[in-house]
Image 1 (cartoon, one colour):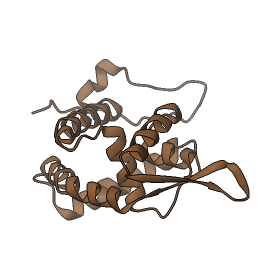
Image 2 (cartoon, rainbow, N blue to C red):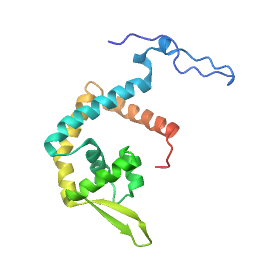
Image 3 (cartoon, rainbow, N blue to C red):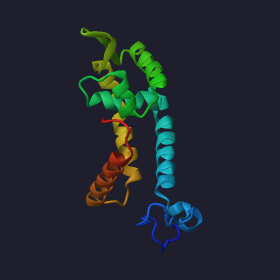
Image 4 (cartoon, one colour):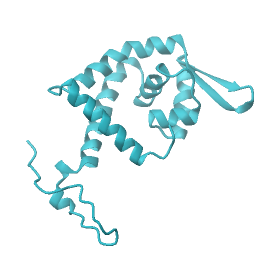
Length: 169
């Protein structure tokens, strides 16, 4: 079990020119939320990458299909934001997903430079086949955490996202 930190991590100075910041040594890695979030996400991604091999999908493809499975149509830029994938990687991912018959890219009539991306029925079937694996992995991650704690956690994550986001999406 992680050691307990008894100090205040979120010290906010009343004078901006003289912040009273604790050191990382005082806080410790086990109480520094960005470090913990990185560890959790890295472990999630590694587990998903292992599990997705049998479906011939990468983590980028899985994220893309997951986002498209709940969206009518998105642009490449929107998909990049929601799937948390750099645009150059997203372009290659979409090319591969289109070759697999999982997505369709359609130019917009009013601006041929913009392509709307939609999931195909084959893409929905592929997503449905690995969704149980994703969901079961999430359940394992939240073992011992009840529904109220889960909802409070996701509410906190939404607040953090608003604080750090660069996009309106």
